[in-house]
Length: 209
Image (cartoon, rainbow, N blue to C red; front, side, top):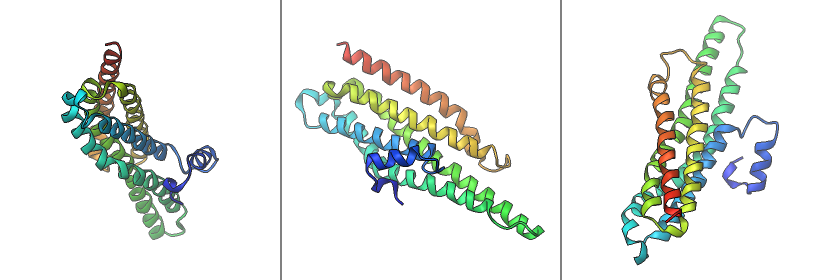
């Protein structure tokens, strides 16, 4: 089942069920998709409008990022669930001999690493989206600045939510696996919070003008 083919109600029902998928990683990727859609909307409402010409450059940059992220976020939502299913399938492999134990261990580790890498891509794309939103809040269509704020909140939730999934999977792996992600995660979390605060400030400032 592809989550992007469901209605919003059907997806929420699936998320609320006792099934482990879709879970938090899928929800984070969906949040990224919503953040991307709102960012794209504000960019489109800015471009070509003489009143907001100062924001055209920011809107073009935001639109370029949104175009890349729009479809990929939906793919990541699906891939996250599939990665979890692969981890569970690995745990069900036979372990009645030393060879089977080794095969099972390697399979679990590789599947778990993949289950870390997929939400990490959500993190990376979410940070790219956040990076363009402050300028859009400052210079874009002022009538849609609140939408930039919502987009930034969703993007921040996507990044921080996906980080949880990255970390919980890395914790079960040997330290030599996923070393780049382990190194990057703390800094990304701090940067996400800082960038998000700047966007919120920009949104509030623009609304008060």
